[in-house]
Image 1: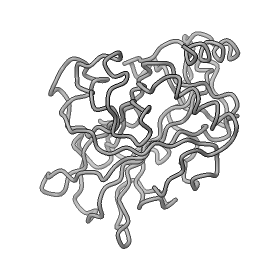
Image 2: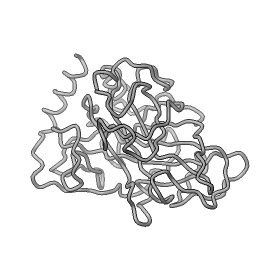
Image 3: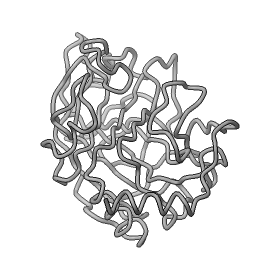
Image 4: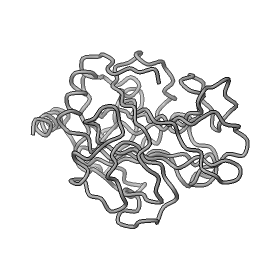
Length: 283
């Protein structure tokens, strides 16, 4: 209840408006590639939960209707699961109250064999230049998709990129990584919400967009934490890799907010609003 009250109060202060004249900022201004601790943030590290040909956001209720995804976090996720069923379910995240779900397509070798990730890290930060004291926690049941599973060519590095471990160097496709460095897929989610809807399927009428120059557009005036999901894979030859969604350039990610809402509110208030870094790990 405390989380709901805090969210309502924050929305009132933001002056939420409608979305008739939505300005669809399609990508951040630049890739996020700074070191941990450079900006306020909180972090959750999550092991693989399961693999499935499901997508409960894009194909809800239709088991097997999607390309294969790897899921992290909430262990109860299926194509047909409801939000209430996710609350309090077991999680693979080190933050036990992070019962959100995160998923991405599966990395495939040149023979089409699955390359299992070693884990994922969820970084929650303010968008570039956004006043961290204005951030509003995600509303319960918020769903977001970032990246394009049907991309025909390169996507912006500020949305989908590859790196070698925690290196600040970003690339459109995987590169040869030195030593035992992991191959990391990075997906950056929108950080401006319309203040009303928790999901919209239409690409022309989105409920979330990206900030620009540190500001959210009037159509999506509510600044929310910017989630960057980093999925680590073992060292691998980059030649001939693909994704279960298609070409290696079809990277994308999905997020379903099923956090314990009071815990999420506390993380935003005690970490982001105060301008500090919480839960920094070696990842």
